Image 1: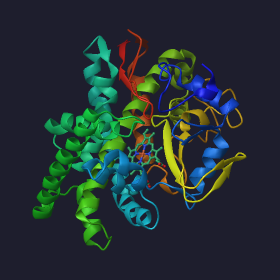
Image 2: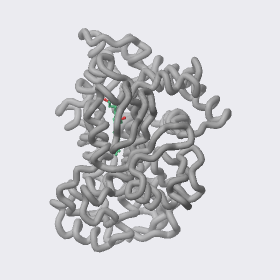
Image 3: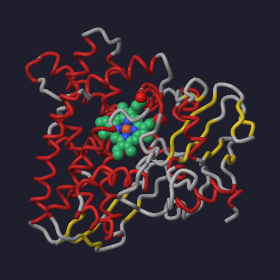
Image 4: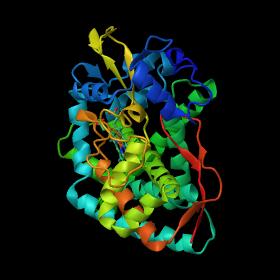
Length: 401
Ligand code: HEM
């Protein structure tokens, strides 16, 4: 296709399959590209960094943008209350609670839990020949971790996953009436569910555990951090959503790339000190969140193009992470890559609040997998979901030995 006609709101049918190819063509030919609705797509590493760093100019607040899309619905309430879609000063106030949730002590507790969970899935995998890696491993770990820290019982975890998908699915560039309705009822059900959990802990403080987030947030609230009940509930929903799909996809893509690049798997097997750089490379190579958004508060020039005030900009992390001006040999998966300043966790004031936790999950998972199995192979072509904002592997059938 003629890349100048590329439109995120009417994307080519093979965009998911050939995402990195389309995005690199945009970056090379038209790094500030206008969509049919007047919004812009930006793809170069340098420009993404500039936008992330200049939060005074580039707003994350989505009230104006989401009003026509979501009206006064619960989806609107959720997506405009979540920390990620707020500007200062609200952002500074709300973000503080995440510092309470992820203290070094809480993270040590969580890491211990991650070790045990990973070992238990591996023990089960050893009993099987054929493995669906998403179902048997990569989906389980982040959901179990995030539900444990939120104190959600095992039997409710499927509900949480379904709600999360419906709520995050509403952020895709186009939205059907049905997706809208199910997104709204997912927010309602999720809110009611968490309200019960909050009340349970308020009435029974002895239920609170070390490293458990709802109690930490309630404590933070009572120790003077200004946060309404609605704000608290939406941060919990956001954390559950933000903390599991993304990590699931980091793990699934990691497995795929180790299978596609056995030389890199062997490198890690022979030198475990490469584990941290290997996780960074998985994150760079397939950013689980492929697109972030901002809107400018005044007229701006980006790479010589005039961007009028109030324009929505789609920042393609998937393109910036493969920008040859920043990364040598960007389309190659290299576990020892250093430096590797990928943008998969964003940058600036909104940088991912759970990045340490996600990195712990990645390191523990792949170290234990590599130590437990000699080899991994694909049984079928991985199934990639038809989504643009999140890069999701739906099904990954593998054989382990
Ligand atoms: C591989 C896994 C993950 C990836 C790739 C990822 C990616 C991101 C990105 C790109 C942002 C920035 C959004 C923006 O600037 O607009 C972000 C923000 C955020 N993430 Fe993550 N994330 C991951 C895991 C997690 C986990 C495990 C948690 C918590 C349990 C979490 C919680 C958050 C929160 C609270 C924010 C909002 C921060 C703010 O606005 O100040 N994330 N994440």
